[in-house]
Image 1 (cartoon, rainbow, N blue to C red):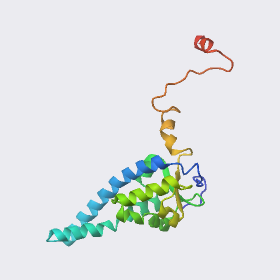
Image 2: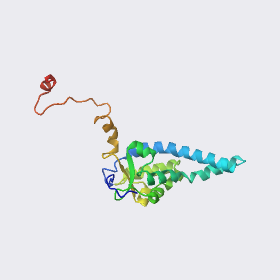
Image 3: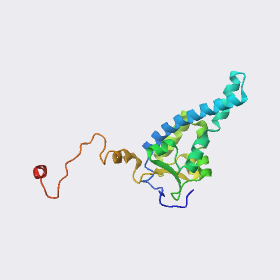
Image 4: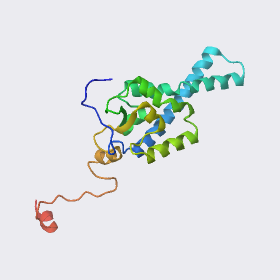
Amino acid sequence: MSDDDSDRVVPDRDTTDVVGARIAAQVVDTVALFVQLVAVTVLLGALVRPSTETGVEGLAFLALFTLPLYGGLLEGFWNGQTLGKRLLGIRVVDRRGRDPGVGAAFLRNVPAVVLFSWVTTAVALAAIATGDRRQRVFDGVAGTHVVDATGGAAGRGAERRLGGRVAGERRRPHRTAGASPARSAARP
């Protein structure tokens, strides 16, 4: 955690208005978590060399308990971001807008153990969509918030990348104050 406040984003109603970006980041992170789960299972299989299918399933079950490491370590040490959050321009902060620290990052990622359950996802989305600070249950427990890391609403991040225009919107001609559209078009 850095003492530098230059990248501090204090969580409020505007900075936590990143529900769409959170969903997209979760999709990216779910793919990464699945890769992690397979890699850990294969590694454990190579070390233990189970002789039955039940043994392999047991190793896969044990690998589930490593899932909070993904978010916990990345968010704890990588500016409050996972791969998905970094791609979408959002990050995890504490109540004061600073990096969450490893302990809070691990705590907010405990539900990753049951991530592949639709019930967990539905409860998380409902909590995010209905709360004032748009927090999941474990964000509240850990004292963390997900905020826009780009300086504006992350949902408008695509607009900034398109030169200030929303996708599909036509560029309007520049007009000087008081000039009519015909005069503006005629000027060199």
